[in-house]
Image 1: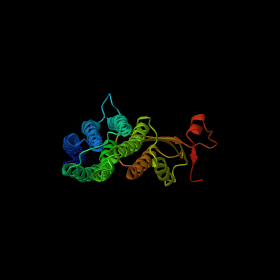
Image 2: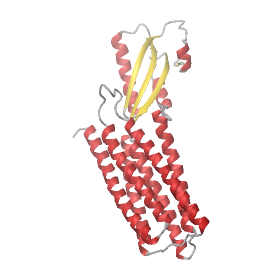
Image 3: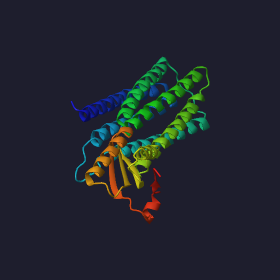
Image 4: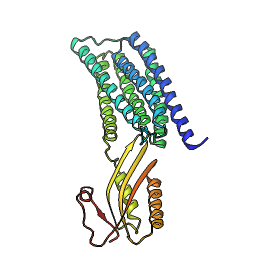
Length: 309
């Protein structure tokens, strides 16, 4: 089994298990939430329901995103993962609107009394255990293969850990007669979800708008500075699509170098960049560094950099 097949298998497996976990959590929370009338648990059920939708989207997206490039998609299908992450963000924000509305309504009308049972505690504690397991598994594979879709799914499950903990505290308070704690817990859940949603949405939009990934520009510049053959470089552009990173840069070399030597230098640069930027494809354009070279307007726009004196 080659590396690409292994990667596909591992990503698909962790995404599929997350779908099954989300199904289990959603069903159990709905049942116990209806039995107890707890808005905190019902809000968690809605949250888990959206997590289920997000997990299904993630499963589909990771299956599509690893397809090789073709004539119609020459940079691959990686941005399917970023679109998936953005869709998950929108789903979470929609859930927050309902949670906030219902919580405020209960606080205003005073209809906050709920029935606390042992099943409520069981489902919330079970949820926390499952969420910890899934978030760790997803985060590990997401980091290993630089998958934004799996990272978004991991954040969904890690958010559930905090929100379930808040709901658990609300149930404890309700056990002692402080029923208002349940809708307050639901509001806190909504606040946590909004924060995570904004983080997910910004990251997805950054990729879809081809923003240079944070830290990658500095990494590539450090690599270029290690090659004394490069007199100057300019027009450094970096973009990502799913797990793949694309680097494009113009480098200036000694005009007396033969074509074979220029090719050898470019190969070494590409390998060096690939060693520090995972799943990176580099496009180098080599130019002769003539004496008295006049900087063009385009070079100024992309900060032409003289190195090695």
